[in-house]
View 1 (cartoon, rainbow, N blue to C red):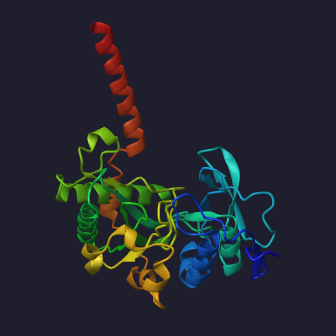
View 2: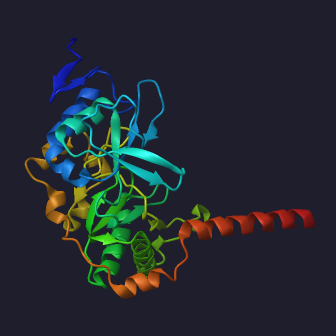
View 3: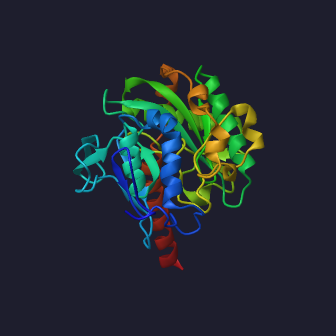
Length: 321
């Protein structure tokens, strides 16, 4: 066994001294060590959730993997689920223990994207708002938009926790009681987005078509059903290997995404688990929020129809010139 290889928790770890990806500034060993150090905080947010991962193999572009590869050890927990998008059964991994987490690290699975639902009981267990600031905007505008979401939630008696996305935006998580239908959670998410937009339409927008956002923060309310999101504490495939990190609402003005990386996060955490501390208890969805959401068109569908309408208008305009 070379110095770049070792065995940990029965998992053979190989090529540990290779750079993780271009501009990462960290090695595969750094990734595995990071996963190991935060495993007690990361595993609870992954447990029993179908897991998609972003892998980056040496010399290749990053790719999303949902189906476990055929060589996956038999001890890795898994769940077979029907995927509507691809019309096939997908065998997802369930990252329920340290051994499995280390195995994913050895597979160069840098980003961990658990589903917003658990295997049992069936139904969505989180409402999430993904806030994406416009190109070139300061991180502070994403924080300001997150506060609009927080206010919209508070107005109906809900509370959420805040984390950096690990990229340029933020996520607001609202834990829900188990067993809610995907349709009702999706509706409530649309309503939260619409209410946050109404608080300050100059700052934030729910416009799904990029050209309609006009430099505003995008309140993405489409994360529902079979959607996934980068887990808290998950690294991201970005320069410097940033990680998605919990942020206390009171501290949100004093941080930036680059503060939290594979190299810095462990020291910042110490023995604490700020996500567990900040995350509210599971909540019921208010009926009026769900009802309002069911009156709001599904963004992707509405955008598709609008895109077709605009294309048709351009064609007709060109024909008449």
